[in-house]
Length: 134
Image (cartoon, rainbow, N blue to C red; front, top):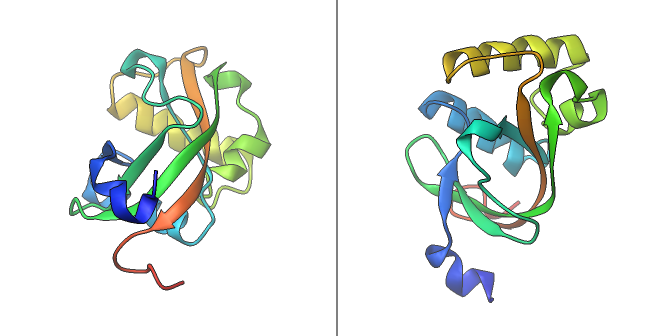
């Protein structure tokens, strides 16, 4: 697919659980800092390796086309520092990542140390709109 001509047909989503968080997280993606994300398995498999989607900001504007490059299930308490750092959200320790994500999952359906997560790594294919000339 020619991304420049066809991104409008791709499925779209926003990171996080609100407009402010969506803006912050897509900002990390656009800066090249965020190359991974995770979500609860109870929310379903949102992607697969090779799938391209449009990441939106908090106002629903398309900002980037990303492509899933790996996807695996892990228990929350098995996520390692390398993955936590790839989430690009400024965590310096695994304890910081766990505290932040414990709060996020508690707000969004419940948390358990052994809960299963989908752990995705992705790459940016194209920047859309503001910030496209980087």
